[in-house]
Image: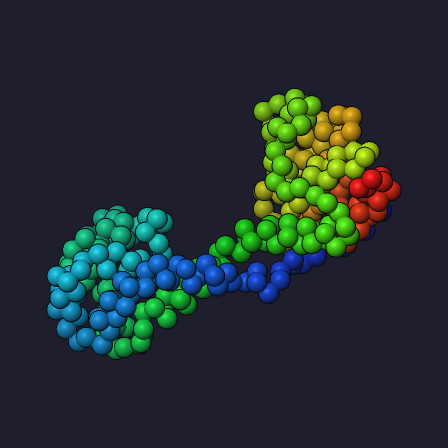
Length: 279
């Protein structure tokens, strides 16, 4: 087992990234489009020496345009970002957009006032597109899991394997009974004439406590599932993040019959073929 596990660890990949992993430009464009009218109205402030007079004029025209100004400092209203003001009070950034005085405090305090006066920004719609691109990098962690699932689905499809996605354990009464309160939605389910395989897929490029939790969780549920006649738990995982949780993964490797990575997934496909898949 140690030799096999060492081989497994040596096969773990640094990244699962495809080119569309880095930025979700469809989402970025939508986020910008949603506030484009307000941004274009705020363009009125660019190049104004008397910035307060310009803010007052825009405020009288449509005060709601200032509601989107959080994004100019790479935050969102929903984030409820806080700051200490000059009086030492702890306040929400978004609370500043309720008055001209507050807006000026925001512009001067952040440094945007000089950026506007000096026309260092030419167009706020273009500027915010760049901000959104930067903020989108925070979503990469979620996309990593989605990319791995997509990759595994492609591997199954290319091998002629029929599968179902996001299947609740409640669809299988015997499994629901043994899992009790630990009900799950499995990433994939594959049925053969011999067994039904309940599959979880993930990828970890970095460490963290979550890896230990995942390993413990699967170590717990796998034996319960495997005890049910006609079912088997399968875990497909990869990523060099597992080097930081090697011991926990090794414990799981010893107790879970079917663990594969993106290199050895072909072995799982071979297992499916030997089980008269699709017949």
